[in-house]
Amino acid sequence: MSAHNRGLRALMKGALRMVYPPQCLCCSDPVAEEGALCPACWGQAQFITGACCQRCAVPLPGDDDDDSAVLLCDDCLRVPRPWLRARAALVYRDTGRKLALMLKHGDRLDLAPALGDWVARAATPLIRPDMLVVPVPLHPRRLAKRKYNQAAVLAQRVAQVHGLTHLPHALRRTRHTPMQDHAGSDERFANLHGALAVTPRFAGRVQGRAVLLVDDVMASGATLSTAAEVLRQAGSGPISVVMLARAVKDT
Image 1: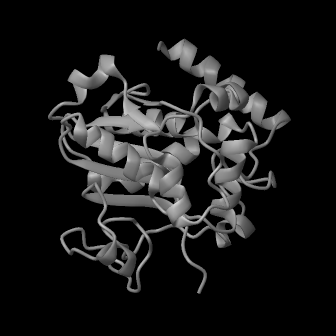
Image 2 (image 1 turned 180 degrees about the vertical axis):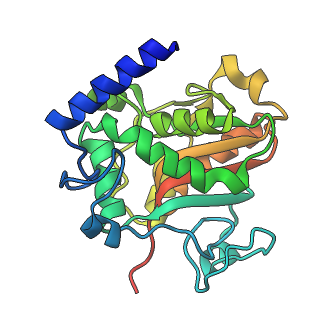
């Protein structure tokens, strides 16, 4: 971009800010810059920056995030996960829950760049050279209703930030499944049984390649487990997962 065009772009951006000042991502209150949270929403945003479970990203007691330490939560000591490591940007509560729902159900595609940057930052310890970034897919019926796959727009940003290949159609839904929001863990896993598959034309591309699975929210892990299992069956390399928000048990 030429200096003239950069200057023109800056002037236009400044004019737009005068008419439409930056707003909080979550509540639309005025903020100092684009992609920021107001003090109230920031105070309720529980970013996962300290110790967390290496398998499911749930926060653990302690302040240190030592990537060399194998920290596992009680659930992951009991339930095997078909991936190596996991990270999440936020706890699925308060601001984190509001933002995830706004992106998922509120037609707020404008949130994707900022939220995608948060996910990309959370994914940094998981990144490997030549890794593939693969989002959890939506069934075509649900995709037609929502207009976009929120996991795919986050995955696109993660791939862009880390200079990786994004394969938004590597996985597909083989059947429509009911919403999982109020289902128990066993029901969630049963609902997803046989519901995902590797898209045949991408099967060769995933063989032997490290994969970063991306989703918006993880609760029981049923969807991510099903996705990871079909990737493993297709001969993928090591799999890691990252999500915008991690649901945690109330204490």
